[in-house]
Each structure stands twice: as C-alpha cells, then as structure tokens.
Length: 349
Image 1 (cartoon, rainbow, N blue to C red):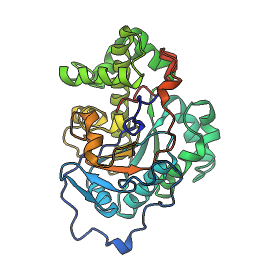
Image 2 (cartoon, one colour):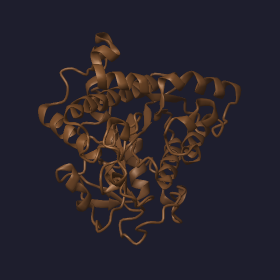
Image 3 (cartoon, rainbow, N blue to C red):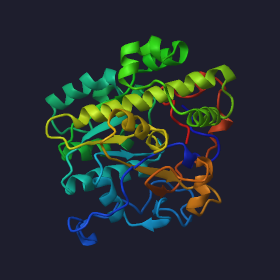
Image 4 (tube, helix red, strand yellow):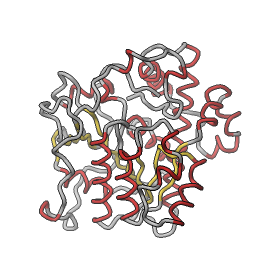
C-alpha cells in the first residue's frame, strides 16, 4: 500500500513494549558495543534536522543512547523493529539491532512482514542447500516480483539473523488471500476456525477501530472509495494477527527465547498493531517496540511526530533517520485499491 500522504515518517512503525527499567549488571558498557551504522547516512534529505540519529523514549520524555535502547529491547520476549520500507538506513539499523541482541545472549526467531507463507518452503529449501547464504535468499523466494524495495536493502537484516543462528519465519499472508479478505471478508477468506484462532473477534475496541479506518483512508491519500475503507482496515487487522501468530510460532521453535518482527511502523505500534494481538494470544509474554521514523520538514522535536498519534507516540523507543525520498506519494496515487501495493495494507501511521 502507498505510504501516508505528506509526512512519510509516519508510514512505518516499530514498537518495543517493555518496561523502561534498564538492565543492570548484565548491561555491556558502551565501549563493548559496536556503534550503530551511521553516519554517514545513505539517505540524503533533511540531514540537518537535529533529530537525525537520535532515539526518543516517549514514556520518559527524554533521549536515550543506542545502548539503552538495546537493553530495553533485550528485556522483552517479543521485539518489534519498525521501519519505513524504502529507507535503506533503517534496514541497516535493524540489522545492527539484531546483531546486538544476539551479542547479549538473546536467541529469538526472526519473523518478517515481507515474506508470505507461500514463500516459506522456498526459503527453507534455499537455506538447507546453502546454509548461511543470506544474499541468495532474494532470488530463491522471488523477491524481485514481490513489490518490496530492492533485495540488497533488506539482505543485511537476513545476514545478521543467520549469523546469529536465528530461524527465519514468513509473517505475512499471500496477496491472493489478502484480496479475498478485502473482497469477501475474513471469515470467507480464512475460515471461521482460523479467525477464532487468531482472536479476530470481537475485534478492536470501537474507538481504536474508528482511528484505524481514518488512517487507512489517509494513507491512501483520501482517495479510497468509502465502501473500501472498512474492508481495507479488516485486511490490516488480519495481517497484524497473522504476524503475531508467526512470532508466537517462531518463539516455540527449539532453542528460541522469543521472537523479533521486522515490519512497518504501523504494525509495530503499541496501541493496536501486532502488540495488541500478542496481548490477546500470549497475554503473559512481554513485548518491546521500536519505531523508526524519517524526519519531516519543519518537525524538529519528538512532539511534532506525536500529532498523528493523538499526541502520544505509541512506541517504547523512536529512532529518527534522514528522509530517503522527498516525493509526495499522493501526487501519483491512482485512487483505487490497486493504487496501493496489495502486499502492504499497513501504511497507516
């Protein structure tokens, strides 16, 4: 799906739902940690924004160091690393976070929004034949035909996961299934038994459901036909639930102590994204969420980014990066369900 109208920083989402208490004696000193991979930045827009490269903890209303952020992430069973899909710097930060989590002794599975259940067999077959070959995954799973940004942007994430011995799980539904969700509804597309297992009923509380529909409309530049907004919101809800299920299944694999999800920021938000579904299917497991935002023109304080979230950033940590592409996506939006990428119905902030 296309990202939201102006303010592309809002389209991805990353949520770390953990307590804000830092780890104590087990926390490595700063000298023991490799610094995150920037600067120099690959993205070249708004480099002079004072937020670039900084991390903000909304609950504490203060900036934190990368060391602190990793400590908070490492404390949770389930870790969500959000992103703006076409920003290569954000993928580098995600790869670095995976490396640092492994260095702290964490052994999670990696779940990935960009892969569907239909690609899992190809992924497994490639890795069985070529253990550790992260860069060959793109060709093996048909990444070039998927509609996601170029494979080299994502390859470092997979390389970091394989180097850490993390199993990789597809966390999304095939496009055909998502289309059925939109056209026929979740029950017809998935079956009543699967809908029940995903805890999709009774659904989001009314206020959260209303806000989701508003953001679905805004993320399509307010050009979706009115009768398509609710079905598209239903598709996003299904995807959130399926990603939560993939994380739970990954965490249940032998030797795993949880799961990490790579997904857009909208899926990672704490109030109603994947964390909401994790709270339904695994209420006793802890969740941590990191949102990774591109900075926006004239927005030089964290509070400027909270406006799209009713004044409160729904993430444990927000990491700011430069802007990759200053083009307004609404200038070329087609005004139909095909104007948004079918495999990304999650672009609401």
